[in-house]
Length: 521
Image (tube, rainbow, N blue to C red; front, side, top):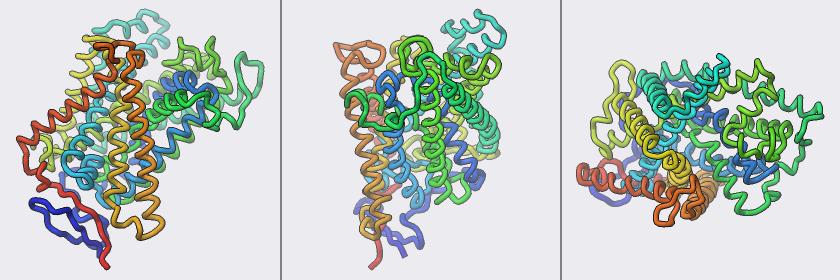
């Protein structure tokens, strides 16, 4: 028998639950239970990360920071994410709640910390959604231009009004698919994820084959030193590359946010998260090594360090690696990757908002479930509307602000991931001496992962102060990325205080209680 011993507080009582680590089952929210299996959950996690899109936009900048040690930096970014994934798995076993980080940090640290953790996830997701819509739009017109041979069609992306209107159409379409529930989501994702992974595998195979044949300008022979992070030129270069690497893995936790809709909600989402992490690191390393062998790391021509192509490496390598006909598939894969991620990224934000509303941390209107689709309809529509307004407003305000908002994303990611990792160790602190497994997977590993991400958070905060970080814009001599990143977090504090006045019961700990599982003697 496992007993829960809550902290003293208003309305708290001692509960006991057989066979579980936590004292409360998640409050019923009306979602479609059992509609996602292990494969579907894994596909959702991979789709949200958007591996092909992440690679084309990250390979170049990472080489610019770490050179041939790019694969080593990818490994270094994978490690803290894996450790945090263990924390998510253990917390999900105890509390399979679609509020994930929000719910778990409330249970560990109380309502205010939990509310801010939920806010960090929500605002990070809205930023990513707007960026994904922009990328999908750019590749849409780029692909149309290549298929039709028309430079004027490809140039439409440069027309701000056309670009924003197209972005809003993509956002509306993704919102509509997510609104229709998990059945519609899975069908779309199987096709899009399968397509992008198949094309990526073909690209890697052809890059390896052509690189080994020799005679390519700038190509490199493989070396195991590429996997050694201690070979990176400087600590500053390593931390900068690490920040980019962490972004590569963001989004894997989406498979946890659909836990209440997953078959075997206590174990399946955690297993799916580890499958996603393994699939990502494998594909990232193979692609990094293959691209580096084929193109090298030079700053001219096809070199991955060329600043003119670093923001879209696959556009430069598609035809040289895959040929004119097959190269078009790589553009299709990037578009599919961005579109797939745009659609699945609505899942975590909508379900986090649903949970926050269910537990009275947000207005009750967001807790409604569509009677037919069993999806968080109002929360999904609100996320889509917020994304559209955010992207359109920022796009017409300033392109520099748009760029700096994307740079501020890393701050939000490290913020809520590290809090969730620490919440795992604190929540299970009474059980850490029970076994070596508990000590490692519920204590040591989550704390190590949280510390690394907290260190990256602090380093990023420090770097943001410099106007050279991001677009180069400054406010009173301080980098605008700093003002945007810190400002978005402070906006969360303001909204939290407004909700505290409207919903005092949640903030008094009467709705979702702080508690720690203990072992009966």
